[in-house]
Length: 84
Image (cartoon, rainbow, N blue to C red; front, side, top):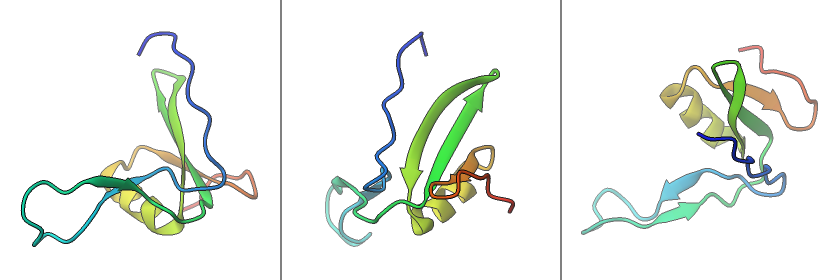
């Protein structure tokens, strides 16, 4: 990543993308942005610099924590890190 500016988080809507339909859907499934209200900010830091951040709802945070255990989570309302 070059010295590009990061896109600001969207505090009004979860920024995770999920696949539409079920696993039984024929052909490729389209991606759709989650419509839930976020309560967390996922923060990724690489080489001591902010690499990315996105707003997540509770269920998308659970998935992100499993897939990317190195990501830090901050409570969007409290401004505090998740202790878990």
